[in-house]
Length: 433
Image (cartoon, rainbow, N blue to C red; front, side, top):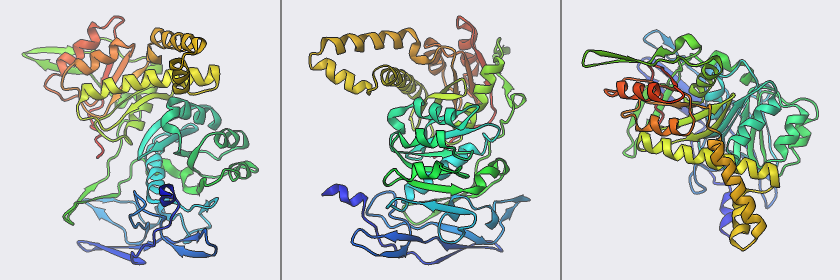
């Protein structure tokens, strides 16, 4: 059976130690090893289950020696390990609880992607669900349970089988809700008494306890070495990105000059809109470009990643918002996915057809939940079409880097909207490839 390839274990042949020399600095990495339970019986020690696909060998290395400093900037060092310390090497700080399957490369990189977002959201309980290295949903709230609910409800279709990363200890109420959903991974700083027992009932769920998650705010301004390997064996090395928009005052007024005339956004975001824009810009740091996302009341409504053009990704993300709205409405009302309702309607069920049309009418009236939402874009809008598309569906505030030759048109779009919308610039691009 082909599905068995996802349960197999690829024996990797990577060395136990890796050394990287940058100028006069030597960085030493040790390979993390895990106890592997074989279906035929017996345990061995080895690297990751497999790489991005089941036929790729993979290993995780932890930096154990060497402190990189470039141009006066001190990079993260051996004492700062998070995901890379998951394994036998540091059981006192990081622990991994499994139910039959040890992690693959994608599990580790998904958790790392979640931590990369949460480092900017330490002030409140927050949850992010990562799928294929992109957030499917993110939310912050007064409790971890509400934050998880918000992250899951943001896109329940994409969240299915995702990696959940949270910044607070998991309590029993949250664990019960998590156990009712299909997740590949749950990563948290700790688990309150009884919570872990609830999660361990889920077969094949990987559970990571990463205590340094409670120190994530210390990583918000720190750099790490970002290495991209090329197919010819070459490398591109860069500094990691850092989010510089941390408070309302960090946003820049949306203003542009064109042919001697100055264009300015005539409305400033409200306090609630500003909070959502700040939250959205933090989440945007972990989304593959080109990307936009919609946020309302501290939770994403839809996240669009990897588009090739700006207006196209806006339009796709609007469609996702409507889909997510319908999905949540159907599950809440009937307890079943919207696709099942559609299938029942096509098979001639008059009652199901009526409910489908009813839900679609509600979604249209609510503009897919986008009315009053904010939009964040990782790069400037080259034309006003992407902004106009969002405003048409009820978006009321927008944040983007600015810097386009057509910024004046983009600003005019929000000024001409009725009701008038707000716009701010970040002055910082958030591309991620």
